[in-house]
Image 1 (cartoon, rainbow, N blue to C red):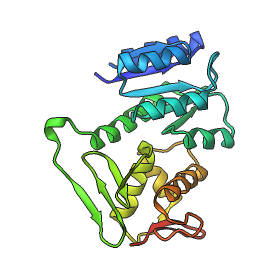
Image 2 (image 1 turned 90 degrees about the vertical axis):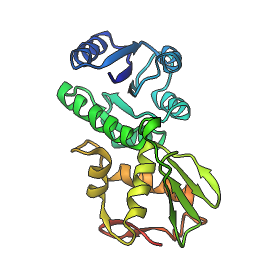
Image 3 (image 1 turned 60 degrees about the vertical axis):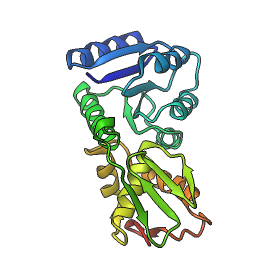
Image 4 (image 1 turned 45 degrees about the vertical axis):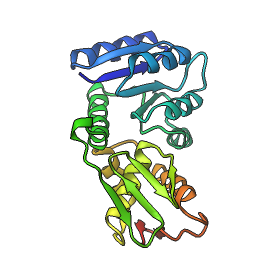
Length: 232
């Protein structure tokens, strides 16, 4: 049974989400504020986090950043703020998806299942693990799929779930040009409120982590008017 940690101070929304997910065979724990959420992360060990941005004791994006530093599990933001700038900031600090209130419970479940499916594929049970290290010949880089770690110039690189999925997709298909829409669908697995700008933020973050000069990228190239490609 998948474990979902809900960090939400609104009692009506909190109870509705808990009731719905419980009926859908999820194990749900609700935290009413950020401090409870951080404590629950350690004790409950969730498979996914639903995080409200408007909490009484934490700025939501600050809490998202703290959670991301402690766990690699998917984080879905739930917020009444539909501004693009708010979404971009959430993705920048480690969120994997963004749901605007009010939202459909069916859509929420679909997003949860899609993220959990991809996360489990990237983190198979220990007994199923097979050592997989995939080198990129002309780049001082390799990716260990078992450990889900990117090494650049011999150093492990910290990245979010979505950033890792994005760089893996790009390097596995060098020279292929991906539209932003293709990348969004590949990361989410279904239609999403996430827009083109979110992909641009992920690309910017990846360039900072792997490029010697992010302003003149050698490996992740922009194809103007279309999208991006990875160059060996």
